[in-house]
Length: 248
Length: 313
Ligand SMILES: Cc1cc2nc3c(=O)[nH]c(=O)nc-3n(C[C@H](O)[C@H](O)[C@H](O)COP(=O)(O)OP(=O)(O)OC[C@H]3O[C@@H](n4cnc5c(N)ncnc54)[C@H](O)[C@@H]3O)c2cc1C
Image 1 (cartoon, rainbow over the protein chains, first blue to last red):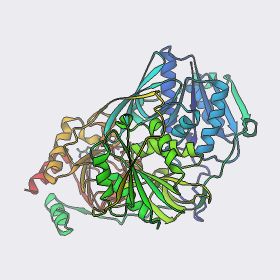
Image 2: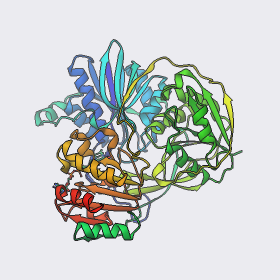
Image 3: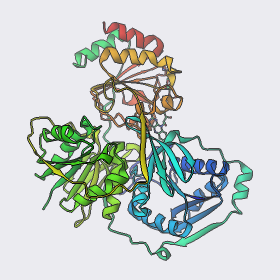
Image 4: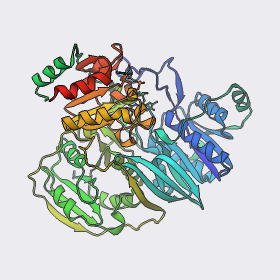
């Protein structure tokens, strides 16, 4: 079985993101970029499945300009067997991403496509579900535990009510939640080794993907600031403040 | 013709409060036809609750044994079958809505708007990105349905007093048979619901253990509050995952929020920035939580929290 892990290059989660002063977007110039943390968790899970002998190959894929190859190399250094770079200068919205991934599925016939539940830039939380719909296969989103047996996966999902367990037939799409695992650190020799692993580049035009009408982004603005508060000196003072504000 | 369809979230007996908040979000679109669809094994009770919501025009009630637990793969084709009559298809931005609605959107061949926090007009919306560090205004092109989740923390629940008619419909799609619900493990549901409680007391990594959390539960009980937590506290296993507040947990807007032993990472803050009053208790006067807290108390939480509970009488 092959596992396909799509990874997105995003602003690192430690960066304090700022809106450009002209409101045209978010400042990404000179900012540290990383693999979306949820995708890293998805990749770690795929690697563990392969290391348990339940899959033969882990393929990472990313869509974007040449710089996404940095994240693909990191994915290879973590342990993926090969990488696919779908080259495009535009930033496709989730439906287009799902359509591109469907084309990769047709080429690779994976048993599992493992995505992150959301990208921490647009926070959309859509692509896995859309891909499952287009592929007409099961989806197990927000996965917190995955067990495979007999062509099926039992997945515990983080839902608002707690942990929900479902059983799905493979092939299927899964999306990772935070507590699925803790991704490994990449070691220097692995980075060297990763340089020799195959990385195929496919021009988006060669996939014949329909790029439907996306949303028009009109403006970006910083969130409203919460007014600064005050520090009280004691519990008694806190209780008084809360009573004065009618909160107790 | 503009008309809105809202997918009801419920547990088979009770309509989830997120549905009433979605109705309020829908009201802001200025479209008079607001239908709510209830998929359930036995939808009558929930359909009745939806029909009583202010602003709802009609409730569509669809019964089916395989609706006993909401599975996106089962429900998405059902929603698609109804979609032709609507300009807008909405669901709450809860794990239910997030799981289902992108699957619906893809079946309809359109993108989905996630987490609408403000309606500008019928096709223009504001939503948070980058963990709430930026707000984008986006427009859905003409000629396609708007498929969107509503950020429930941004809208008050619609009140009761409505009298919508309930229409029973037959299920139109078949069970794909590849996805099976097994079980849900979670809190017993006895305490107030974290997503809608007026007061929430959250603990962080500093609680140190599940036993350490006892003082949080005790203070919460005294206040009639729900208990929440930071990711660090959930990751450490002190409390279950459904208590996580933040970018990737629950986004909440209580009137009063206590952040106890929580540093105030941006991913946590994005979950509480619509709270009325934020109280922070932290021993580090420099902790970022104090930058957004309305009331701060610096000191050891293991002394201050029991003292606070006592002071409340
Ligand atoms: C992709 C991603 C998504 C994330 N999503 C979320 C999310 O949804 N929600 C979330 O919360 N986090 C999330 N995080 C994690 C977030 O970045 C922080 O790591 C986390 O919120 C820290 O939790 P904490 O404040 O409890 O712990 P810490 O940052 O360790 O803070 C503990 C605080 O307790 C104080 N303290 C210690 N002892 C005492 C004492 N005795 N008395 C008083 N104060 C004390 C310390 O001064 C400190 O400020 C996410 C991270 C990533 C990368």
